[in-house]
Length: 306
DNA sequence: CCGCTGCCCTGCAGGC
DNA sequence: TGCCTGCAGGGCAGCG
Image 1 (tube, rainbow, N blue to C red):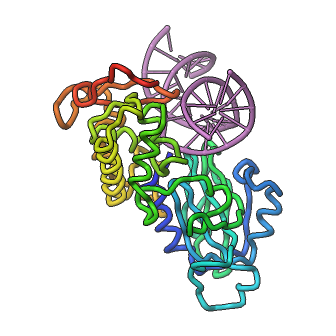
Image 2 (image 1 turned 45 degrees about the vertical axis):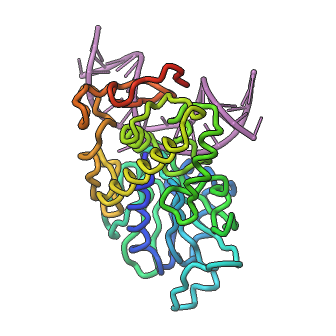
Image 3 (image 1 turned 90 degrees about the horizontal axis):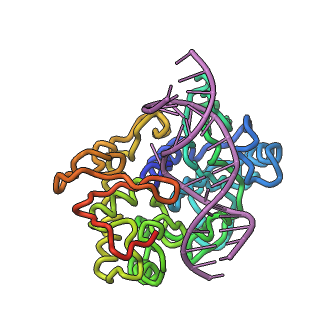
């Protein structure tokens, strides 16, 4: 799935292409894409028409567009995000495993897995939600204040991600060490720290020289800090490269691929040499998915926690 | 409360 | 060629 760097790349594109525009028409082509919008597809379509897009926001892997009130569409003045007080409404997006948000000119052929189309009053490019596996989806959600940050209700339980100002590394270190589970399971827990998925978990663990099954309670404070620093580092580097894409499924709003896959040390590199020591990268099955490690740099702990 | 399993979907690669 | 299995970057309900 798109992880934080890929979602942030998309967010920037959507902010550039959609902010300040007003929705003219919405077409839900597959009801499952809006299954989290309880009132249903027709309500989803109807309630978005006439709404203006104020901004594109993100926490972890969730992306949302702050919407203006229907009455605001008369105003030509672009209004930024309302810093405090007035709660608003947002178009919430999660890309799941295979979701894409694309900006496409009117007349571009429909993608095979086009699920939702947005047209705007300016007649310019459409915004399209394309999703092969339909694990992702869109919904309308109220914004609520959580520790000074306006979040859509379904995102209220998601922890800050490592690139947010409100991210508190020491608090995460403490919570991490109080868990009784494997370190990778904890890294993937979006209510502890958000934005990390299978790729960047493996890459950060490799950088920190930690095995995925290392019990969280045995992590020293400095080791936990090093791990979070490695997470931040790998996310920053991937973001600078425009994200990771192995194939056409992971692209920015213009359909362009990121290049971070060229920098992956272990993820997907089974049988190839560890860039640090040359030992052959191994693949383990874990949580019904894969984990990649260097057998020398990341030895399996004696008290491994699966 | 916490940790963990199973499941939601489609498509593709690889084995037979 | 086809059929089958396993796998893919996620998250959530529901269980103990």
